[in-house]
Length: 178
Image (tube, rainbow, N blue to C red; front, side):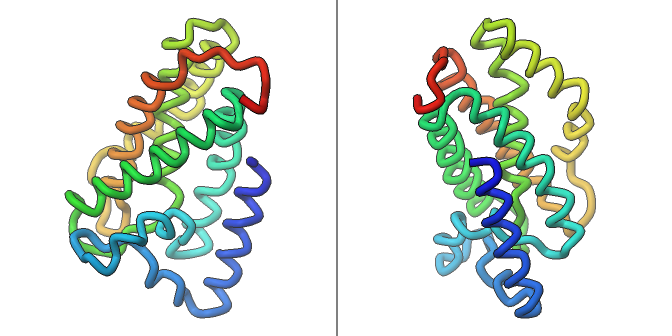
């Protein structure tokens, strides 16, 4: 799953570059009914190559770590973060075109920070501590900073990632297909 995320996003990024970023029309514009379905496409799009590169490595690392909870749990978490973050950004964010995988990344970040403590499993607790130490600086991204950064996507993703941990982190999983 982690590598497939990379290849899907890289392919979309290449197409977006070749077409002069024409796919960014499928970003999420708050309170625009015609853009409401774009809650599913916005996380796949990026405003620049730098935006793409700044997201892809962290997305792959976090995807791999969330996959340790099992494929079914990974899919539940991803879909829940995608839909809830997309809807709240659509309802409450400032005007503009919100796009990028950071909404999912921040959701995984919130999940991984809390999941080890909720599961009370030593190996998962170590992952939570690792995430806090090495990625804790991401907390700054929850604050308004710059006109072209969707801090709302970061904030709502983080909140719904924590809620996803409350729902699904307690489930021990020793079978990857779970």
